[in-house]
Image (cartoon, rainbow, N blue to C red; front, side, top):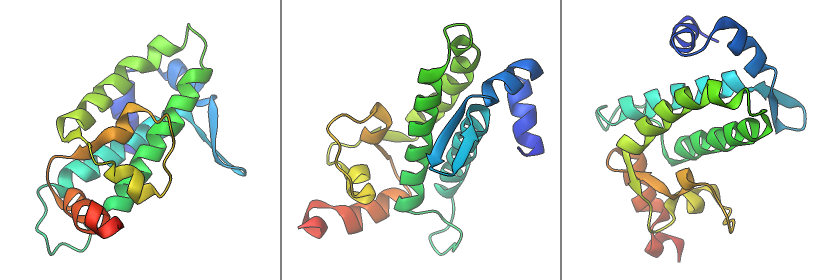
Length: 155
């Protein structure tokens, strides 16, 4: 975890909470487990980058695209798996920090009525969480989704 991440989390969680919550490991792949606090921090970092890119010039080669956006949604899926495994006594400790991040996400996204995120992901699953039905209101990710993953492009 980076220095800024540790500061952000210390404002919301005690050091003991951070240690205990990070003992809840979610497997991103068969051989790679990630602690819940580290996943929440990854969600925060992804949101920060996606928000920053909304204001970046279109010729900036560091701008993230649609696949990076989907990677952020996958991280949020992993967080949901970790939170589901927490006991009732530990859930309230991380939920306020997670709710603040989810609100940031909601602020720069809107309903994805066309299913762009799922098209980018390439998997249509019958019951996905709410974050899969959101698309940025503007910016490079939205532009890429509309250009390459719109109905006419998908046909």
